[in-house]
Length: 252
Image (cartoon, rainbow, N blue to C red; front, side):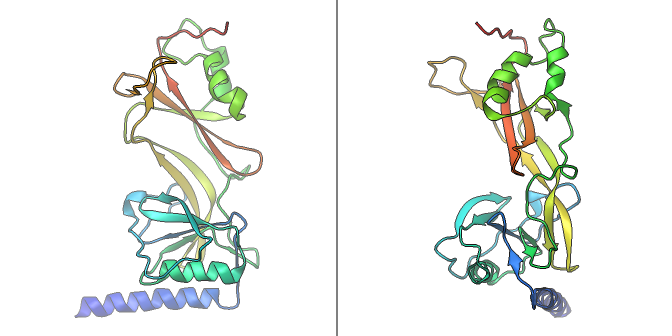
């Protein structure tokens, strides 16, 4: 009985804090993206998807809300209609029967909060620069060939020498992009910085232009290169290259 009373008190306190914070304010959704995290842990670096619980949809979302993905088991929605009245309907539908701990994508009309994106001077992706591959010893086949990487993601996808990359050499490994915006933390009534954790579960490739059977990158002993950059408009862009070390590349 004491436990139930405590849980009820905590829930009422959380809802009261959120109602007080929201009162007299409006959220602006410049990115047209809203995410509600229940039971999640948001740190200055990464969101931990394994601790995010599923949100139960007990109400109907507006017709123009479209799910564009998920963070762990929590859905991410987008809508072209960012009017507050429409956003409020979406918030009410998503929070019906649940008590989100974080609201990602919420920005106050008074300037507080920060939508998710890549902010120069704030967002960071630690790693090795793509440009460093240009000065690598071409005889060292343990390092990916610069021309191969340039042809794969730099020429067509806009990646630059200054953009960083990391290697993933097995399933379950992840890369992290830090400080990509803020989330409203209901328990504290404050905005907290968030990051993105990208976990690679598997990767496949084709070993010839006419092959129809994908092969396992990690099973064949290869690695996956994961690069990240700002596309110039504040959007986070990821680039993937299968690193087949031991193979020379030549442009004919």
